[in-house]
Length: 250
Image (cartoon, rainbow, N blue to C red; front, top):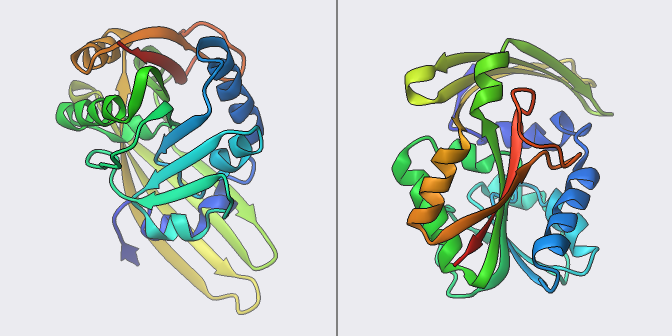
């Protein structure tokens, strides 16, 4: 069994595990928010771009995107395009010396920032890379929903022509830290040889309330314009596990 840092091994099977994720609908939701709050936006910076799924779809809408990702394995799978540029870097420390119309951070990347210092650093980096009145658009685990619904153990199975992947997610809550440690055990079977590999990773996720986010944002010079469900625009509630927020740089 291999125990690695988050996404070191997981990234090899990331796209297969999330093949059923509706990246197109999420990208549509982001585009609608950009049109609503910053209709003249053309340049986007994406924090934690992963394998570039959102970047690719948004680039097809005419946006020019720079994706930042610390996992080289993830970036190796990202699509190459004239409208997309990738940078291997940590979003807490990245310094591009360039400004953008909007900063995006999707698929709960901000929730991976479990310390106050890390959250504040991400807001600061977003502010540094934004044009005046630019937007920071991101989604997080929403505290009221997490505390009501409580994460439970889940099993996911996906398969392609080469491998079959079974992922067991076993969460451990730390309510005094507003954190959930999601312990993954991943079994990967090579369909031709029937060789079975087992991997283990732990992903720590922070859940946020809106007042928390407002405070971090204000400290970095942002004010909130929006919070809601990215797919249906519903207001945040105890049923909204992931909430999308739009903050504007002052």
